Length: 96
Image (tube, rainbow, N blue to C red; front, side):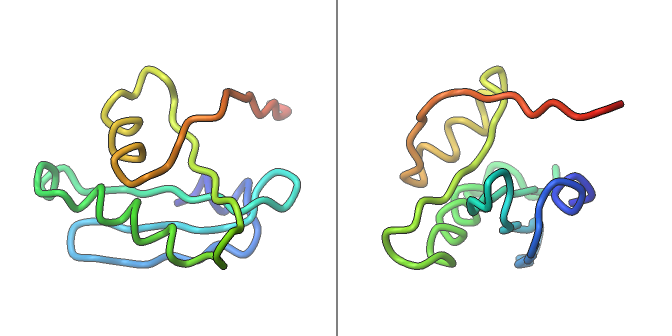
């Protein structure tokens, strides 16, 4: 959540028991989403439900971006199961 507030504008958080969905505007004003699921709530489909729900918070036809590190296979699978599709990779470079 702290990272979302640092790099995104207009951040909104939707809470569910055991997790949150985050939506905001990131690089070039594009809509971006992220989810966080408590360790104790994993394995019950909450991650997929949150990833799916955030897609319905943007107007129809407007793209929604979700960033996952390629090595985070769990996150990649969750977002693909929620009908997000991979389009490429990017790096956000910030001053230390």
